Image (cartoon, rainbow, N blue to C red; front, top):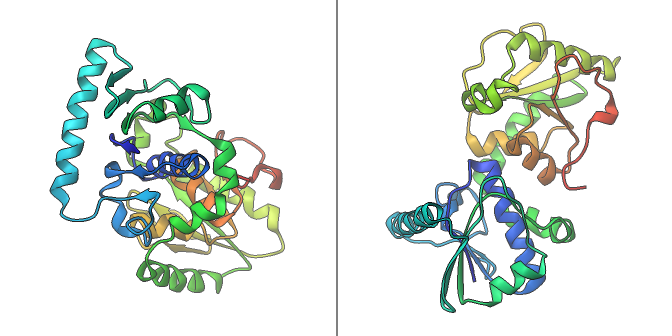
Length: 285
């Protein structure tokens, strides 16, 4: 069994890491337990019901205690510069932030078999082959509860009344003020310029926008046809997955929406870029 024992970023990051391990577990017949997904697990239907996608149910404090112990161990491993620690029953594996790990590699699969419980830390775990192979199963595993689905359905229906093409715009602020020295922290005017360029791609069809952000949206988009999202972490993400197209700064948050909904996304790397429909790609396709 692999235990994801360390929180790696926020929702989007943790979804992708979790999904890579689930896909790899399906390919190689082992189980995954993920206490590090604790604050997000309640949004999803099946995480506590599947024998591979293990999500520890019950009271919150056993998970908190597990994560605290794991954090102490990984901190010690970082200090003493050890990548592995443990025995045939329980082993810890520390992956540096700048490093990648191929879950399909012979070395990693041997590590999994070398112990009964392998607790891992890190962000750079990948298995694109299994991820693509089991993409539909992953989408099903990460279906959200009907309550959220219904809220999204109402929002989407209202937004579609305003135009023939529905585009989700993610205005990522907050932590992006400092991420990579604010490279992707765009102003409202910069988003507006991108929106105008994109609308020309669909002329003469009318574009309706759904705008979601992790900060309050000012009335800077008065001359666009738009609807504000529900301002809910999971509903905004899955709302994007139901749009025709998605636009936003590079983020695993919207990347997951693109993957889940099989919807093309354009990541705004440069404001001055001349956007074309070829810039829109479906993540995981």
